[in-house]
Image 1 (cartoon, rainbow, N blue to C red):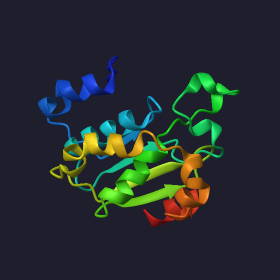
Image 2 (cartoon, helix red, strand yellow):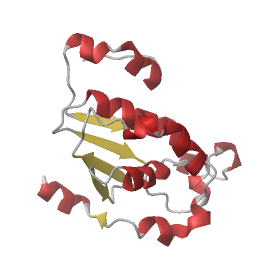
Image 3 (spheres, one colour):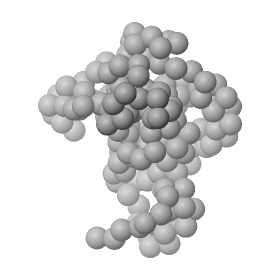
Image 4 (cartoon, rainbow, N blue to C red):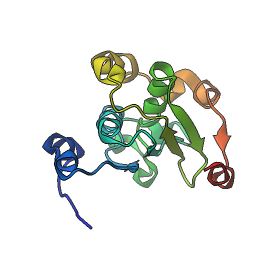
Length: 164
């Protein structure tokens, strides 16, 4: 087992996995709870993943508007902060219809399990600045819970595992 004490941006920039000949089958993203970080982590992970791999993105199902804020200092209960990671799912649904995105009702704040990866696809990277402009200013309360959760089925974890 290896541990890397560095930011995910620095980790991916180092190219350590390709240098070692490692091609991950699974990546779990749960870091800084801001859209731009989660989106960058997804892009960087997909670029080095196995095509048959899966990227899991945590905290995509905030259960109230407060926890979906970009500002954790504004929270009454900072333990329940998902930030605006949910926007990553919205951006992927908009820009990458080629991906298979399963939103699992994993306790407590959901998990996006994304497969159908294409390490050579640069659509997100090419649109990164535009995506920031489009999504960073949007709040969950602006589109409403139905506006977000109406875009996908929420899958029971047992049902998701049975599909694998």
